[in-house]
Image (tube, rainbow, N blue to C red; front, side, top):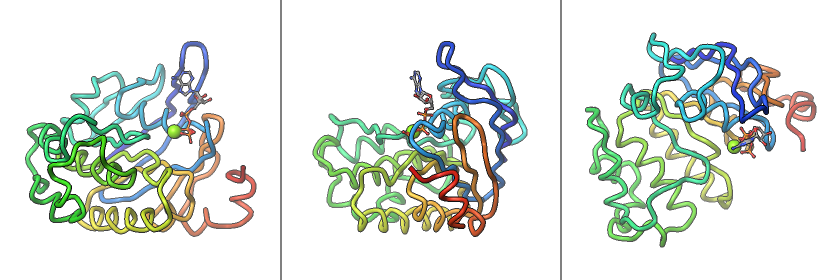
Length: 229
Ligand SMILES: Nc1ncnc2c1ncn2[C@@H]1O[C@H](COP(=O)(O)OP(=O)(O)OP(=O)(O)O)[C@@H](O)[C@H]1O
Ligand SMILES: [Mg+2]
């Protein structure tokens, strides 16, 4: 459903992505692993159109979307949970969900989000700024689901969360993906990502260094060569 082919993305003259290619098939959970500054966020932003690639192709559901406005890409069925989970601090949980509707029909409604993520229910009236980091992350994913995406791009959802919350987040994402939602998950937390994903890519210095099934990416030798700090 997503085919990224040899994209090059720049920040000014800095050549951040140098020919990145990857694919996500329907219903697949694919992780994108890499150290700090490797190019994970830039890859997701290039796909959703926030930092459009200067060269290369991004096809989603058979259509070329490189250069298309992010809002239109979202309307086609691509959700995005950005790094740092930017929810609206001055809106309640309920309103954060409400405003995330984009008119796409599908299984996800507010009631369905509260059903799938029951920890949000008692927080309905709480302001975004008064949520814990874990609650904000869960809300950020709920917001993305309100757009009824077919593919969800998720940028380091486990970042800054305590181990218990990371486990809970993994369970929530598994619930969501078991309903057929495809996910491209950028992560530095290898265990979290490899437990969720079917396949993965390792990115470093703006280039894909390795691609394979999660068992292959778990190998000590792979981790020490490409991912150790
Ligand atoms: N707004 C920006 N302006 C200039 N350079 C940037 C900008 N954002 C990122 N970069 C650079 O682009 C490269 C890739 O950064 P990116 O944020 O994609 O990495 P990342 O893999 O998401 O890292 P992290 O794990 O820290 O989030 C880095 O060298 C970074 O310094
Ligand atoms: Mg990042």
